[in-house]
Length: 321
Ligand code: GLV
Ligand code: GLV
Image 1 (cartoon, helix red, strand yellow):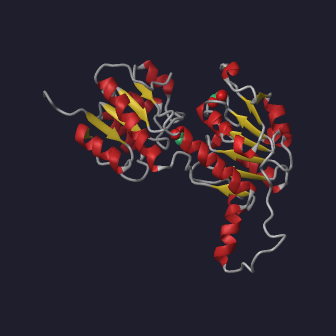
Image 2 (cartoon, helix red, strand yellow):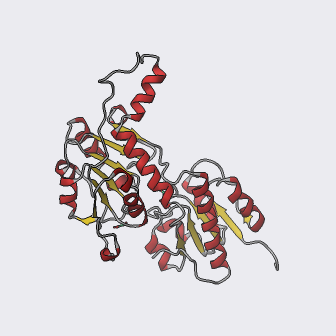
Image 3 (cartoon, helix red, strand yellow):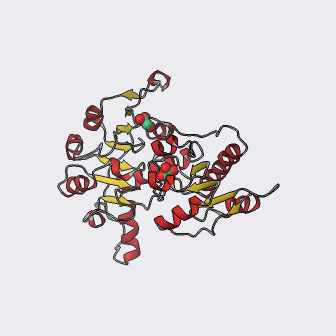
C-alpha cells in the first residue's frame, strides 16, 4: 500500500514528546502500557512489526527473535543491551541499536548523587527529619565520610566512566581507573591513572562501576574483590546489577568489610537480595541513571532516528555489534 506507515512495536509508554512523533510516523502494533509486557505479549508484538523499540526490562532472546521474521530493527531504549541476544539477531540479519551519548551526563550526574548520598548519609538524614524524632543539631549526629581529596576508582572508562571522572575535579579527587577493553588508554587525560582491578580496589576510597554487563563482567565484583577494598570504602553501581555478586555485597556490608554502597541497579530487578533493604549503609535507587526528561526524550528520538535509517535502507547510526 503506497504511503502506508511502517508498523512499530513499542514495549513501554515513552515520554509524551516521543509518543507524539511515534503516533505521527508509525502504525502501532499495540497500544503500549506503563508496565513490563509479559513475554508472550512481547513476542506477539515483535512478530507483527517492521521495527521495534524495546527497553532493558524486555528479554529479547533467540526464541523471540525467531518468531519475528518481518522485524528489521530492534532499537534498544538504553545504552546497555545485555537484554538482547545479539548473536541470534546477527545470525538472522536483524539490526540492533542502542542510545549512547544522550544519557551520559544524566548517568554520570546520578552516579555522583548516589556517591554523595552514600558518603554523607543523605537518605538517613531525610528519614530522621521526616520521622519527627529529630531533636536539633548535634556535633555527633549522622557523621559521614568526607569525599574531597579522597581517591576515586572507576571500573570501565567508556563514555560514562569518563564523564564521572571529569566531575571529580571539583572534589580534588585523584582518579584511578581500570578497563578491560583494549581501548586507546593514551587518549585519556594523563592525570587519570590506570590500575589493575586488584590495585584499584585496594587503593580507592570510592569505587564506581561503569562497564557493560557481558559474560566477562558478570560478578566482576564478588567476595574476593570486596575483601580487597578498604573498610572505609564505598561501592557505587549505576551500570548493571549482575556485575556485582549481590549476596557477597550484602555479606560484606553486614560484616563491615566495606563501609557502604550506593546502588541504582540489582541482580534481579526489581527484587533485592534478602537483607539489603535493611542496611542503613546502603543507598538504594530504582534504576534512575538516565531518568531525566531530557535524556529520556533524546533516547526515544535516537531510537526513532535509527529506525528511520534502517527502514529507508540507510546504515543505522547506533548499530551495536
Ligand atoms: C540504562 O540502564 C541504560 O543502559 O541505558
Ligand atoms: C567499558 O566501558 C570499559 O571501559 O571496559
